[in-house]
Image 1 (cartoon, rainbow, N blue to C red):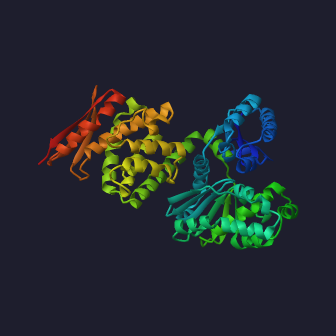
Image 2 (cartoon, rainbow, N blue to C red):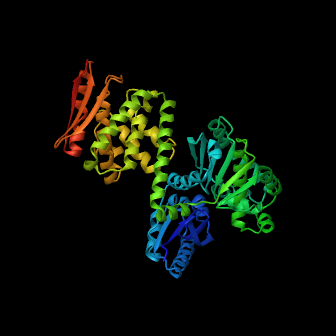
Image 3 (cartoon, rainbow, N blue to C red):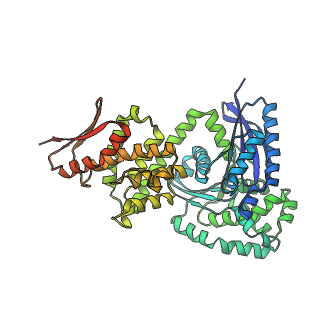
Length: 507
């Protein structure tokens, strides 16, 4: 009997269940059920989720669990996104869901949600689409935008604007259609300015995912093939013109959709209309993937999913290098420090027990460690800490950004301490990880203290109780030896191994 997995996803405007199993063509969906429930309306309007909404959510979840039982599904994963994540009473809501249903909801941050879907979408694009594209994930409360050029994600932007969030802000205007459209357009002006600055060349393709674009596909009567649909630009424009002067009630009746969906539709269409103007695309390509689809794939095809993650980390490194260039960091110095850091990391595998994810975080930390110098060289570590936490780095979620920021904060003379807010506010396992990574980065920075390419060769060797770094050069290394002596203390405190730097003279 094939293994089946269920995923329950609690989004801003609906609860969804998907049950899937492996097949020769990928994940086969054997059941998919959605129930509209605008938890986001509570969060965006009142700041917290009401207990009446909680009661409805619990009822729906219990129904989903009954369906899973009917299918003999024992493995059920569950995830919650923006509505619960941003609710002031999140902890109480999660506690009650756990007590009433036994469901241990995983609340993921916006960037992780978008990353999980984005990886799936990227794996499906053909070479022509990857050559030049604006890729958008339109959420109920947030929008993520990616620029693809020559097969690479060259930049990304996350914006806290979404269709449901906007419809809640301006619900008093919703029946005054012309005013409603006008106020949304004016509200989105800063978003428009940001997009104009972000997109300097018009991409050829426009690719989008999200609940609202799925509704638009249905309204445009386009067929869905292999989880994707194509809407011509002209057809989309015609739809916009035909509904922009209609109330949600009339739209719902004419297109046979729920009024709750119709209410969030106009903000979404205005946003899509604005985004497509920044492209030369003749069509809108919509992918019907959600975080539930991604979780099914990651569970049923763990090896393939891990391969996608490794590929995606390549985009993260490119993104960090682009940011480093933007903030005028020395690329040759970054390369030298990165190479030495990774040599040490690889030699220390059995002592740090870290994997590829943490190796990438070390690379990203090395790339971004000096971005604060553009603002002020005196306290650039602290400046970089705040910059990194507010940057959009492709493929990196909020927790990972916090880790990178902390490692960068300590890459110089500072040593992690519980007396520091930047360190103490981290969870204990994360504090240990930060110390492990920054102790390695400190050694690499010490070896390259002069920022000059002094060494012809660097070798790293691990003996029983010493990490020995041998640098070959004919130049003076007094600065490096002095810096290494100062910065190697943390490494010994973390690993219990002494790090030493040897100079090998060359002719």
